[in-house]
Image 1: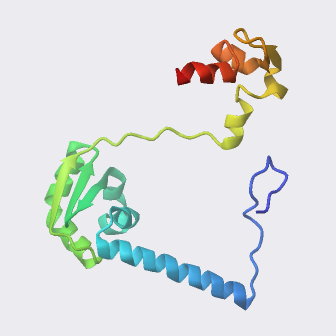
Image 2 (image 1 turned 180 degrees about the vertical axis):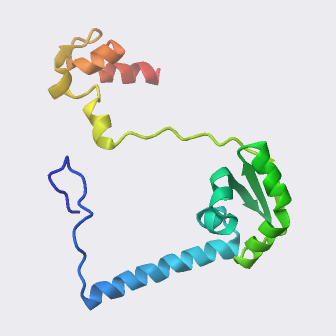
Amino acid sequence: MNLNSNNGKRDFHKKLPNDSASQKNFSALKNCLNEVQHTWKKEGSLRALVQEWSNIAGLQLAANCSPISFHRGVVVIGASHPQWRQALLYNRPQLLAELRSAGYKVKSLKIQQHHPTELPKQQSVFNTWDKHPSRIDIHGMSECNKCGSPCPAGEKNLWGKCSFCKRQELNK
């Protein structure tokens, strides 16, 4: 793993080797990934459908509608607004034909209203560690109110005790 001096982040801009052995490895990896995608499509995987959705439905429709499930040949598509649901209903035969021509074994298509919830954005590991209560270099040291042992001040401020006393409390 190549780490540069930018806060321990990986350096992805480094040139890859261009020799024949590397090309064979890249070709083998590409073939493997293509095989996985082919298997997903053959088995009716939702993941494969989600990856190809913008190509199948078109950019405008894909931005407002998405596949929710794909089980036993039935694809359920969720629309973010009633007007997009209406557009899907109107274009159902074309969408079904497009799905089948893309290689999906679709028996029927169900369309429903769907309000996707955005997943909370995860902080990077570095940001989480910078704020961690156990960091004595940032928060300093203190003394546990319960056992009197030395502990990070961040733990004492957060829980009123050290992490060992907090763990004992949680295990009761």
